Length: 182
Image (tube, rainbow, N blue to C red; front, side, top):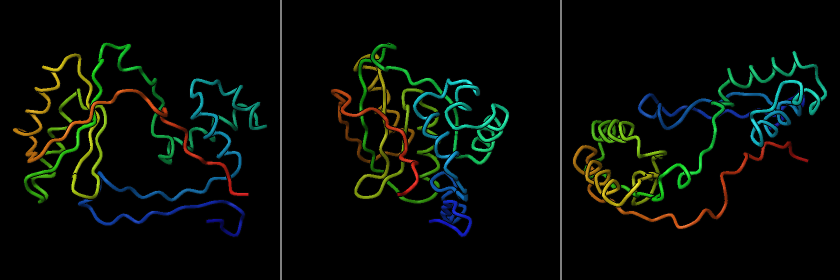
């Protein structure tokens, strides 16, 4: 939504403390330069401040200040290298849909703790519908995957675990479409 000063802002209310890991509060105003910086950083976060400054038409110091502000606001959560799972020795990449036995706060906490303790789970999200959580699991071999699935059931409280073998990447993770509206 555009405010009076021509800046875009978005606010997402936090439903309550029980959803701290699921929802966060975002109150941010992004101008065109912020949007250009975010797009550039999503394509190549390894660019120097001088390169970014040239791209957006600011001094390197002003650009660095803007990037720091975007990081401090939480819009930029981190700068990481994206690895190829198979090339790094994890040929099995599996989506795991989990339905919990119980749906109380203690069960959710126990499951979340179990998932966070498993390095083979490289991402996990709470979802809606018949499935409670969707995980991405990597493994070197089927036996390693089986151990993860057993731990999800025994330590995590999963009543149902469904696996979907990832065959091939259809579309890589894409940048968020932060361009301003026409």
